[in-house]
Image (cartoon, rainbow, N blue to C red; front, top):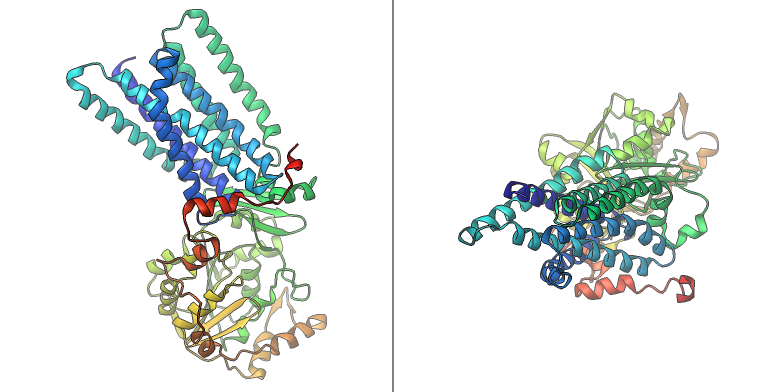
Length: 526
C-alpha cells in the first residue's frame, strides 16, 4: 500500500470514528433525556476507549503476530460489528433498567472506540517507510486523520442526519467501516484462500446487517425514550416520528408530543379540556392591553401559535424553532398546522437567541417561550439573566416576557432580578417593567376577541373558562421574590437550573447517581 493510500485510510478512519461519536451522542442524549452531563459522560467513555486502544493496540498486534494491515482490518471490522449491535442491545437493557441500560451503553461506547483507537498507531507504524523522514510521515498521517475527524461531525452531524434517520445512519456507517476493513484485508499478506473467506464472511455480515436491521431496531426510539415504561406501553408505538439533525420528535397515542424522549406538549386547542394547559396561551391578552407583535421561541406542537394567531389583533407572530422536525409533525395535524400558512406568521428555523442578535431593531409586545424542562441541557440558553436582558431590549414600552418555569423557583427569582414586575399563571412567569393591572372589563373584552373558524372561542361551555381566567390574580411577586434567600440567579456561566438540579459534584459521583437507580430488581434481568 503506497503512502498516498495510507493517507486516504487515515482520512477514512478519522471520518468514520467521529461519525460513530456523533451517533452515540444522539442516542445517549435521548436515552438520558438530554441531561447536561449526558454528552460529557459519552465523550469520556469514547476518549478512554480511543486512548486505551492506542496504548495497547500495538501490544495486542505483537502478541497475535499479525501483519499491520491484517490487524487494522480486523480492528475496523470488530468496531463495526460492536457498533451495529450495541444500539439494539442497549435499548433492550434500558427497558429492564434505565440505570444499567446507560451503563451498558457507555461500556459499548468504550468498546467501539477501543477498536478504532488501535488503528491509528498501527497505521502510523505501517506508513512510515524511512527512518530519516519519521516526523514528516507521522505529521502527514496525523494531518490526514484530523481532516477526516473534522469531516465526520460536519458531514454526518450537519448533513446525513438531516437527510436520513439515526438508525439508517448507524447502518450506513457500520457498512462503510466493514467495507473499509474488508478492502484492507484484501491487500494484506494472507493467502488467497483466506482473502476469499474474508470476502464471503464480511459480505455476508453486510447483507445480514441490512436484512436484520428492521427487526433488530424495531421500536428502537420507543425503548430508548421510555425505558422501563416501554413494557407498560407495548404493543403501542409512536404514531408518527420525525427526525432532523436537531433531534427526534414523536407523537404518542392519542396526541402527546415527545421531543428527545421527554414530554413536550399535546396537539390541543380546546381550553375546556385543557389537556396541555393551553389556557396559558389564551391568557396572553389578559396580560397586555393590545398585543400586536409577538415573538415565540419554540414551536412545539404548534398549538400555542395557532391560538395566538386566532387573536384577531395580532399583526405579526414570529416563531423561531431550532428543530424543523416539529414543523413537519405539525403538518400531520391540519387544524394546527394551518398556522404555518397564515401570512401573519413568520417561522424561522434558527436559534432563538441568535435570531434576536441578528435582528436588533425588531420590537415586540410579548415574547414567549414554552421552553423545555429547566434541568435539561442548554435550558440556560433561554432562562439566564443574559437572555432575559436581551429580550428586554426587544420589548416595546409596556411589553412583557412570558415563559415556562417548569417548576423552578430559580427561574422566578431570575425574572424578578431583571424586571420590576413579576406574576405567575400556573407554571408560567410573566415579567415586565409595567405592572400587570389591566381592569377586568378590559381583560374580558380582549379575551372575547378569540375566534376560530368564524366562531368565538369563549362561548357556551367555554364561558366558565373565561370566568376562571378573569379570576386569576396578577399582583406582582417581584418584591417578595427579590427578598428570597437560597435561590440562584441563573446566568450563562453558572447554568444553575441544569447543574444545581443534576448535581455539580465530581463527574463520577454524578454518573454513578444516574447509574444506580434501583428501578427494577436484579431478578428482572433473567
